[in-house]
Image (spheres, rainbow, N blue to C red):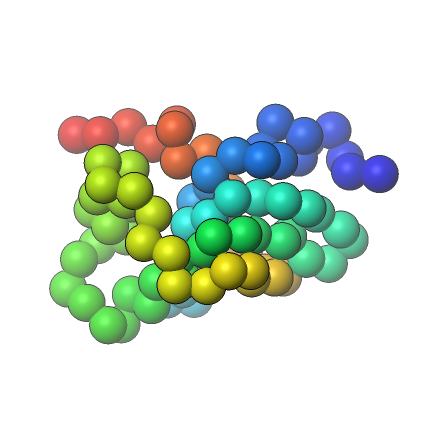
Length: 91
């Protein structure tokens, strides 16, 4: 059973920030003890561009997620934060 903290995120487009240069944008489909499961994912390596994470996320909110993976498992202990893409504030 999924912890109730995760329920509001299931089925939503989310932004997963990690303790690495990788940023994940996709639809959260499942959570277990070790991994979160994302579908229709943009795995973005910050080392491959000059854009900040925040600017990249805002652009994704405006223009949509650029899917480059059908499915990704992300280790929960690799995560710094998770938020709904809809909750991102454009500035």
